Length: 328
Image 1 (cartoon, rainbow, N blue to C red):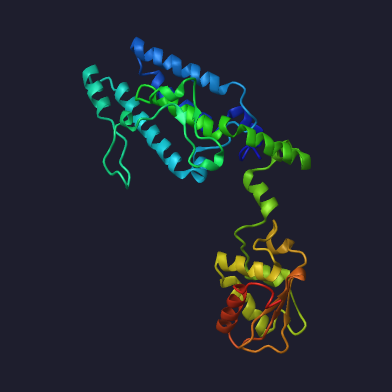
Image 2: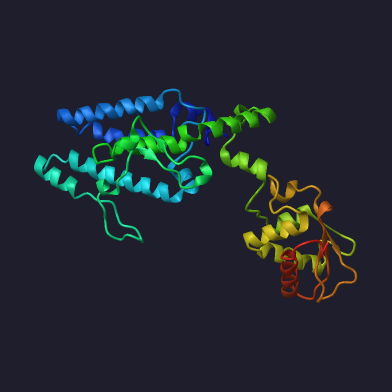
């Protein structure tokens, strides 16, 4: 949505997977000297030219790391193919070995084994073609030719780079174009998505979703939390609560916020921008066996005056795990 961390420049620089493709091919441009290899490189250049034509608005934003979040196994396989391609390029570039030796070394190149099939395997033995098969029937199609007559063209060491290019383009660009265009069209109804290019992805995430890793200091709690009706900032019971809140882990802080405010995150700016402010009052009929209770709509925490921090912590954490409105 932001076109990367620097939206103004990314559309010109085309960082992301496009730059990775350029780096893979730049290595091969200096090392292929034979006429046959030059012709193969020309075919690759033609393929890359087709890929770069009429690129959509999100071209170059999605990366290998993004793909791994969506399809871990396929992303891992593509990484293995890139490593295989790099090994091949290093062999071809090595001027210290003869052509016969290069051919022998190329024949010995293999992909690593897996947990189910631990033995290495030659690329040609996988039976890959220039056809993409989705990992689930939920996508609504069973196959897609990455190029004309792709079903009948096998993937070999000779055309490996073209296969990597086409699969990467299909997964991160052309294959998701309809969905991305539909998303932008829907978002533009609310706000033109181009207006978001001034923000980084992390900034936009914070604005939309708040602070997903809430943090606060003792000073923050004392400054932006209001003790009332039986508590002051100097009250021992309130001071125990402050110490307990400071000692909570990130997950425990999120649970506390969900319990006290109805939301597990803080707005941008943290406690200073939480409205209404968290109010802590003394639960008059409470004792060491009682639990805290809340009015989440007004961020109102009713806290018994426990005799120790240990009891307060135990009761508070137990209350945060309670589902429903029993402690409301």
